[in-house]
Image: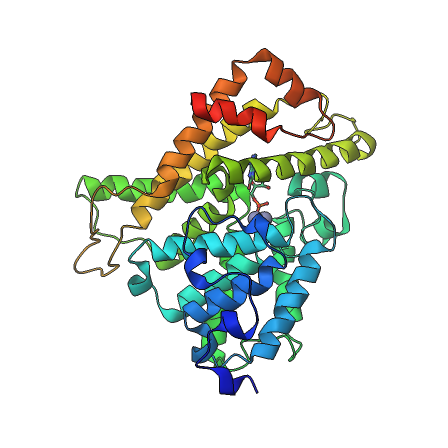
Length: 369
Ligand code: 8BR
Ligand code: ZN
Ligand code: ZN
């Protein structure tokens, strides 16, 4: 009976709490809604025409959304759960709406990017690769210590897709599916933070030579897609402060839960994330300045690309463009710097277990910044 309603919007048919226009905004706060995977996947896949193009059965899509939510919440990780998966999809979609890339990439590439975004941390246990390797976990042994989590996220999703009640890509032909699968795997594997530096280096070198007019090569679309997904993955620190601080709190608690286990299970008992001594403020300042800033610098250039044609060289529409995250990143970094000058707040931040940042208190620092 769903077919008869195709003229109605997906939001109406499924009584979704938001519509697609809300998902186009940088300041959309996914934390305010229940069941984030269902509405993001339905609305965003529909907006990019994937549902009609691949003749996706809406019941199967809903089943998949449900299975994704189950896998994402299985380990009750404070940060790496269904909200993070849905957030990365919504943020990726947001990037695409602020660029010309929808004309640069093929439909299949956009499909792989959006799918990789929603599945990229499936069944995340809330422990990082380093922990899984050091404790000789089953997962580390299966994947020989190499991008252990990322291999698992991708592998377990393709296992799910063997079930025809979950396989939304049933109508892709075998050539398309082969390219799609290979792209999704390489996108998810590229979210391993161990690849951050080489990914940024590759693109920075490229843009440097482009600006000096001395390059004849163009970046491949796979690298561009990897940058977009990587940026969406770490975008929490580039969101408005009130949204970012909720994510920062959750990931810090996840780090500390791992730290608690490290004290028990590490041979030398030397935790990487000790809740007693970790300086949360310096951790965030380091994360923003060393990881997020360089990534978003490159991303801003990537989003201005409007052709990958080898003969015409790479062209960009505008040389300078302001994106909302440029402002938010600067403000967030400055806010932490204000916080770091205040010893009282530092004490509160370090000694509260589990960490609870006082949002109202911190607001005064936003104003100072
Ligand atoms: P995943 O989300 O795919 O695990 O990769 C991103 C990694 O970046 C996280 O595991 C975490 O180590 C780091 N990270 C993120 Br995301 N947000 C952070 C934050 N606000 N502060 C510190 N590290 C963060
Ligand atoms: Zn991950
Ligand atoms: Zn992630």
